[in-house]
Length: 114
Length: 111
Image (cartoon, rainbow over all chains, first blue to last red; front, side, top):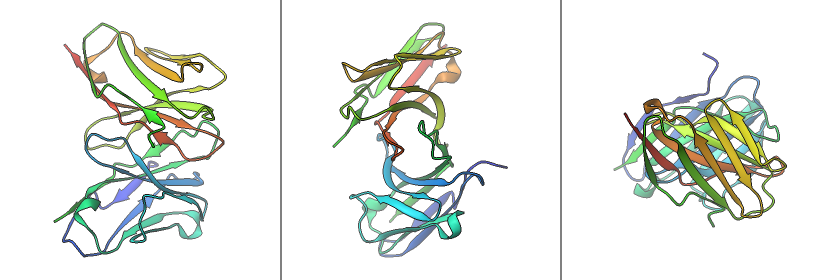
């Protein structure tokens, strides 16, 4: 399978716990994005990487969120001290980093914070 | 600030007729526009794109029109099929930077 894969598909956690999600992009893609989507809204940008460099981080992303992409391959998104407002679908996408930026999305990780 | 807006949250169309989905944007620096389609429990998938230097791009049943002076684009699906029922997101990008998405329009094609 050469698509973008995300793990886990679903995560239920209690408020205050830490969670970590993983994304494996398409192997030849040098860009990797994280988006968050809630019901009735479009994907909301969180952060993106060009190879291992984190190029931009949304102002909406609090200090509780951190993302890494060591060696420019897979990426992890960690949320510390989760809050109920963090409940959402977390989407990862990868691309070749071209002008028309066709993103290939994974199926997402659905986070529920109780 | 919502730079890409889709003001119609939903649209219902009879099978075989034309579906028109609309999108407005505020940032005149955007140089590419894209449409994505999303089924439940799946990530969005790319549908069609258009450069800001063009006013039309066509791919099979899908055509995207761009009106730069009005900062408006639209996606036409002709003829509409039940399998087209999904949420459609308009998106935009400028200068190799991040892709910004609209809030989506849920299309229902009635058999």
